[in-house]
Length: 201
Length: 201
DNA sequence: CAAATACGGAACCATTTGGTCTCGTTACTC
DNA sequence: GAGTAACGAGACCAAATGGTTCCGTATTTG
Image 1 (cartoon, helix red, strand yellow):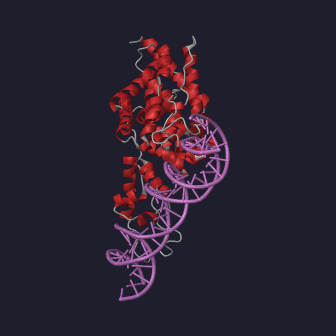
Image 2 (cartoon, chains in turn brown, orange, blue, yellow):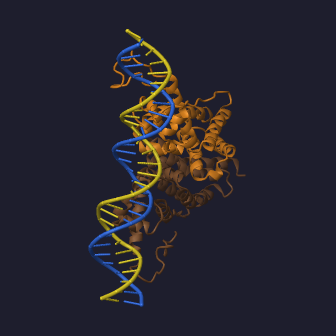
Image 3 (cartoon, rainbow over the protein chains, first blue to last red):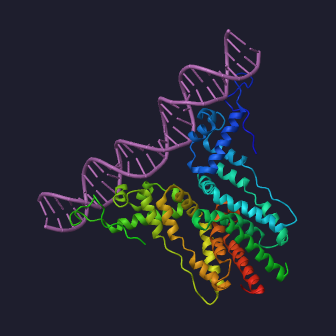
């Protein structure tokens, strides 16, 4: 998480005089941006929409961020990171993670496609998204099931993200979160069985 | 493949008089649109670009299609369908298909993200893409390896499409087509082994 | 040859939208 | 209280671009 700017070059030469920035406004704007990101996707957000939802004026936005992309990049970085549950049942932990991913794809189908679209249009967005895209929590969970050196961990981790995204975009009719979760977990169990049978590397 | 319009309501009440439409122009426009689709992705195509590349005027475009989306929808439908090779080595056939998919993701990383973006903006594009999205060739090949009733065929077929797309969008540094091909084929072989060991359903 | 329509090219129009500016007001420091 | 800057709201500006129209020309039928 990156904190909002406390000073802006050329705008606030003397930060002791005048009415101070309202931190609550900054927060409201970031929250509005994040909400819209989830609801309609990046490419359908207009600055006017963000301002209205935050109960703010566009001036309040551009006083804080130089461009729309800078605002949304910060909103993206502010989005909460996933954390992996750790119980003594690794497969149950995996199922929780996969289910979460599948549910997101089902309930907020516009988020990731919108991000893909935005990453193509703006380098700052591209950086922000890639920076936040850390699948190590998924790889760790898979490692507990398959063993730390299993050759398919990276691919399986990507699969847990890629398949829900893909189905949301191209075959929304096969996007039942529960079914998809079981398909994916079942596949991973199958891989685990295969390895166990043959003996690991 | 859908043929171009031979008559337009309100535009050509009498199709025997006047200079006829030039079929070569129609073709050049569709080709230009398809090329741009592969090169820069849907959302960066401007009608002016299509016209220039086709050596045509914008008038020639709008004489044939009512909107930009209609033109590009037809260009999408015109794109050649994949066909599955069938030898007596199903795994080799699979590798060919997967490699093709991975190479596309590597060489034309803007196509599919651009389509996703465009599907969000226009229903006609959404229809055209989904109509052309048939993974049965991949499922057939997988069925030859895993058996026709294997429970993971649908998921694995989606994986062959989704993972290259995902990596192209989010982790381009891990987008080596050869490596990715082997990862995916190896996973599928692993699943096949697992099934064979346990006996099929 | 006349009528009709397509052609490329360029000017043109209309809409959308990111970003700026202004106004009257409010909240802070000195 | 004086000075300064943030606030919401809305007018405003500028760029991009989908789509139309017009021009002079070429190609068809009759």
